[in-house]
Length: 183
Image 1 (cartoon, rainbow, N blue to C red):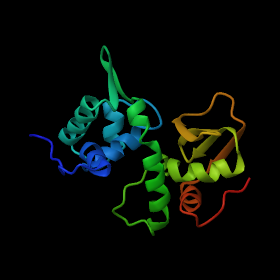
Image 2 (tube, rainbow, N blue to C red):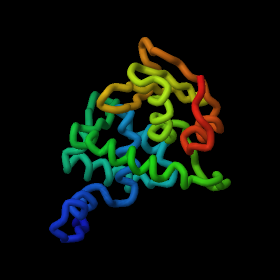
Image 3 (cartoon, rainbow, N blue to C red):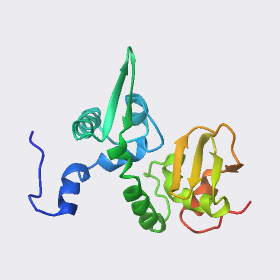
């Protein structure tokens, strides 16, 4: 099936031609923290079909936004520099969307690492530079805060400047701006 296009000579239109399809930015969100296996992506994108995930991964690879590493029976997907360049877009969407989350509906899926983008702003507010490991329930991720911005990565930092432990409800309140992060 040929890819649909807006056929507008417009930078926003061209960008949306590449990443505006359903699920595409969420696949990129999952890969912002580092390489992931197909099964991990599928598990952390509830509601996506295997066909849709495979299609999105192939599209992103074809467009040079991710690479597929094959190592025998194990393979993983990782963002290229072009894919990582979308992080500020995701960050802006998370800042805009966090206050609009509202109350969680019983049908809403949730993963603690989905709070990583908006939570990063709160973490950077208490540690202007360095690394911070954050435990949200069973999920562990870390932030690297530099003058260039904030990035998050799977797992703990090897030598964090600070370590935080939050429950999912606390992390949600901090990410949505309902409460401040204090240490």
